[in-house]
Image (cartoon, rainbow over all chains, first blue to last red; front, side, top):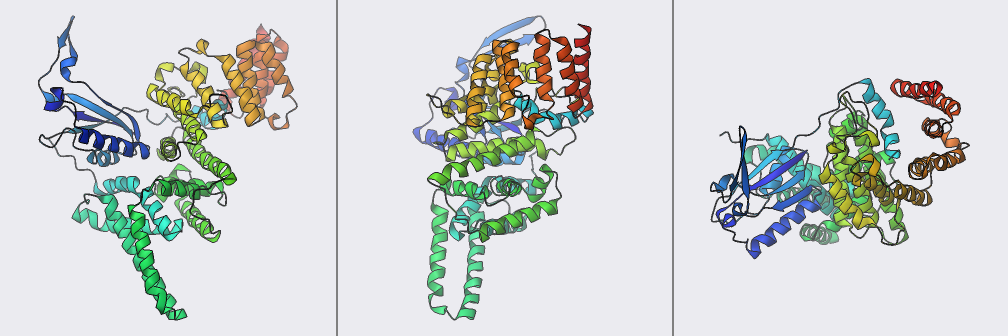
Length: 140
Length: 423
């Protein structure tokens, strides 16, 4: 299963303060741990919302709104994409993350699961796929 | 807002999955017996299952499990040395040996576990074991999967699989397989056994179909994860990156390769918008690490390079068939097989026209291993039809239909035979 761990933005972050050397080191170590466990698919941090825009959709109209946006707890600061066996495993990994932005402010990581293709519908064709799966790969 | 309260047993399962490979690997170095190490780790899990539901999950569950396993190991050691003392009256050096073992155990906890994990992978995939045993042991010790999960994934009864694991552990102990990373000449063969195990796990999942237990397709993800772990542990091994690249790119097509009613969709007919671009990007990055600048790549890297040609093409007609044909030629050289040769013929036909492809197919006509392989006459019929040799093409399609093993495909081939008759 694929999950996105979303870090909510923080005041410092929004103010454009770069993370401390110490935090950077802790994050690198954490990311390495995720890599070594083979669960990390992607990771990225985002610039402050002052450098972003929003496009508001209303009937017949699209309006572009410049950042910054104020409600920093609702802003995304960065994300990891993990491939793990269960939500619980994603939670265990998230709990091991370093405090995202210094410990003087509460922080939050949100875990969301990706939509994925469910099992293929049962049919005669599925039986055929079973037999032919390898053949198709050979036809590449 | 409701506080999410994940089921404690599912949480313990998650902790186990994260921690158990490191745990088993460290213990194995200490006791020099992966079977015993796995038993000790399992014992620690049992203690956790008894205590964590009441006491809560400890802050550092990995260290907690390690301590529990270690305590259990020391108990075992004491009991054994006591027995020894009784039987052999060797009381004098027992205490010294016991202290030595305890300090070994302490050191095992402190060291970086990377090399131990690598030793564990090589041991689980040791050639002294049958192929089935290697798969089971790898999933059990490195995937942290339960016997039940592995049994469901391979469609065998749980008791059968449990037996398989017990026997595998005994075989390793009896053969005195050393807990080590193979070096020198041995290393290449041992590594190829590891890669084979991972790719077999992947293919087992890839061929999973409708109505299968969800553990089967999950094998694809697990194989990919194991491949990525191995690439971190042995980054200097180019074929490891090649295998990872191959699996990432193949997995990128999982959503596109079957239709709404589960019918398989051939590569060139797939909706490329459904290909997973994140996995393709990862696959191409792994391939870049795997490829040697001057050629001389191994079979996984070459297959990955072929898969990458398709992944890079936005539409089927942008496919670089000339490159695919030359990669198949290289693959045929490195790991020759009639099926590879047939694939090469298809690529050559796409790159240089049906006549060139047909020449290669004709050379396979007397190949005994393809005697009952329906794709041989199917490809031949296709090329003949493109050359306008309809009556010959028709005969080939009919022959292919007679060899095809399922109704839907037979129908398709007979349809092509009829089309040849009309033209």
